Structures are given as structure tokens and as C-alpha cells.
Image 1 (tube, rainbow, N blue to C red):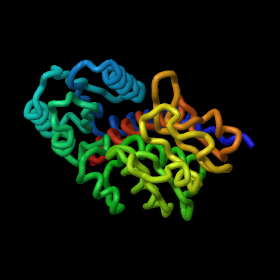
Image 2: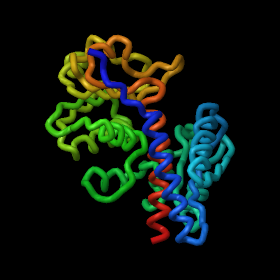
Image 3: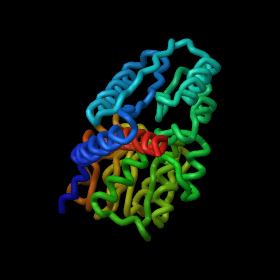
Length: 281
């Protein structure tokens, strides 16, 4: 048995085609006001610079605009907060992204939580997380939202299944666990203090790698027939799961690259457009 390939790259292209039509419909009724995503980039981390550029390209492909707000590496928390305040007050900006990680001297959580809920299209605020967890309207963190969209597209039901999420990041592991519980999965979240990790992972009918370490989750930890979601991306084009050891045994899997990554960016753009549609209503 070879697992079903959950092709995030292909699905993201379908989503982009739909977004392009929605952008044109929005422009027709709002006088041609183009939706804008503002991306704050503090410093010149090469990976962050590349990611912000890719998000800008994504916006332009569907007819939206991305504005990069570049700040010096030595910026203070107060300076970043002031920039966020300016963008919150700008009616021409519908979405705000603070590219992370930020330099060590900046209080990242304080900056995330300064973003207006209506413009929190990356799903990073505590308020947005709480509302999402309670099943109330809010934009979900982009990567977990992309994973849920991918599972839904391939008709992989979560109800009653045991899911194991390895990693408890506030923008990935934790929100994904809440989203899966809202779809009636039984969820275990593993972390650096989890005892007997391989045995816990073997319980998972769905296993999510979200730990940020290359091939940390070994193939023999994963049961036959499991759905494997690899949300990691590490040097050498490898994820957090030893995928080569499970592709022939799992029921479905996300490739690396081409699985979760494209869905993250697609959901960020989709949620920015949704914010623009709400602002124009």
C-alpha cells in the first residue's frame, strides 16, 4: 500500500484561482480598492526575506497588493508596536503580518497581540487563538488552517480519530490541536517533556510532525495505515518525519516540499481577502 499524496501545491493553485475571481468581484463592488497585506520584516534574516518576497508574489498573482515594511535589525519593541499601531489605523491595509522570528530584543508576543483582531490574518494573537479554540469567528493560524483545508479537500475525516501532534508551538502545534478537537478528534500534544514518545506516536491514527527537527519522528514510530502530516521544513528538503520509511505503509501523507508549505501561504492570502471582503461589506 502506497499512501495517498496530499498535494498542497496543487490545491494551493486551485485556491489561488478561486481567490483571483473573488478579488475581481470585490474590486467591482468597492470601486477598485485593492486588498493590501502589510508584512513587517525586522532585520534581514535570509529565510524571512525570502518568505516575505514569496508572500508578495502570491498576493500579486491573485490581484492583491503586498507592502513590505522593513525595519532595522536593532529595532525596539516600542518601535515595532508603533508600526503596528500605524497599520491598525490605516484603512487601506486589511491584513498585518509580523514575520517571525523577530530579533531577540523584541517582545514578540506583545507585538503579535497588538495586531487588530480584524487584521490578524496570520492568526497570531491570543484573542484570536481563544476565539478559534471556542469555535467563535477568528482567523486561524495560517499553517494549521492550511493543514485542515488539506484534510478536508482529500476527505479525510477527523471525527473519532486519535491524533498525535508532536510540537506545541503557539502558532502551529497548539492551534492545530484545538482545530482538530473542534472537528471531534481525540488529540494528544507531545513536547520535549513527553515520556515514551515513540509509544505515544504509535497510538496516532493521524500523526503531525511540528517540532522543527529533521526526520526527528522515525518511521518505526508510526503505525501502519496512519495519516502522516509533516509540517516541518529543514535544510536538504526534509521535514520532521522520516517519510521515506512510511510512504509505503501509511494511508496518506504530505510531501516535503509541496505539502503543508504552499497551503500556509494560500491560507494567509485567503484570510487577507476575507478581511477585505468584510471591511467592504
